[in-house]
Image (cartoon, rainbow, N blue to C red; front, side):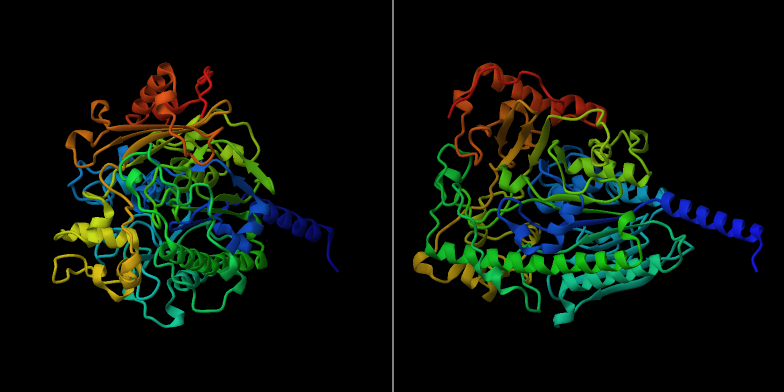
Length: 580
């Protein structure tokens, strides 16, 4: 028979345990896909993620700051714009012009959000692709990034035969494990490999006890990046019937745009076949990502951890499949390259909500740190970060300040127009590595007998570049004059894209000096959703001058206060309507 005292004691302990469980800091899962579009319908292949969208918030005006892999990922990790992370010059060493080296720029990683999460009490794990160049983050087997408990980073990024780190931090500050290369069996499909590794790690933390530390898991699948290899198991055959969208931009010649656009070749029947094939494979590769998320979700639900877990889902940039005649690539300033999915679910996030406030990649680091601290107190975030936390908006509270424009910058990694890479002269090893990285082909990067990348004459590319020679067309994907700084303005009264272009080969243009600008574009997106009519020459001088001044203030900003001032909403910007 139990005494009243023992019953009271049991109830008190249960109440305390419940309070501790409620007060425990949330887990965080961050999924960053590779080249996933928003405007081309990629979410059709992802029923789990569509369901999670209804559990949380869809950030419908989320932008990346640069439409290429390493530059974009650097802004995410650091919470800083590319002009505050860039290499010293075009020819300086870096990861697609970003100074992400822990040796040359130790502050890049030391001040990033992942070591900060570790200091806030999180157990941290990195799985899959993080940056395109990770030698001094463990991929050389010697140097390791501080603040990472589990390192399962993809070093050589492939769907099969990938190179990985496999290290676990020890209590004494050392590392157990080593490097390994996965094989080419179905079990070695890289999305499956990182999914299994991340789920096993999450299980080990959760099953260590009810008082386990909160975890942060970074999941970086290679999908749907070229070669967009589908998973080795059957997927819904209905995906074969989903056609690549032929929006008004598809196959459209753009004579009033910059650089190579006025001379792009048409999309012929061979191009259309390749585009459809790539689109289908992209969708199928994303099925595997959706499966990984589903398995982790089901496990966390089974152990009552899902409701105390934030899940962030986004991509490093969007994509082209025939838009403005660019058959297959990224690196463009327009919305189909800069808008990406941004889905967030977690504690206090309103189910099925849409947040139309303008948010962008540099805002993620301060937001994650706010949520990890258990609230939305801006004092938890370093003022050295350029972004602003949107944690308050996520949890239904008043956002104290917000910007009216997103800054987009791209320093082209091309010295010549891209199509020449496989048809021109000898290239440097650096150019070859960047080319292979940007295109994602699973081929060796050695030179052929002509001094060109071996991929130019490989069997894999024979269908992409060389077969059907009688209808082969030269599509340009990028080039030195596709170097730009831009403002994407959505501030309630205005919906604009303003861009300035320079030549990356010009040393004086590295910082977008005003007197080196060689082309400008302006789109009134309210009337021109697909950005097909450059109205710069029609716009009032007062407007274009104000836009240029704001842009140049933005590309010099440093820190959250300075960047907020440069990008804050401007009242009555368009007192003259720009007609198309």
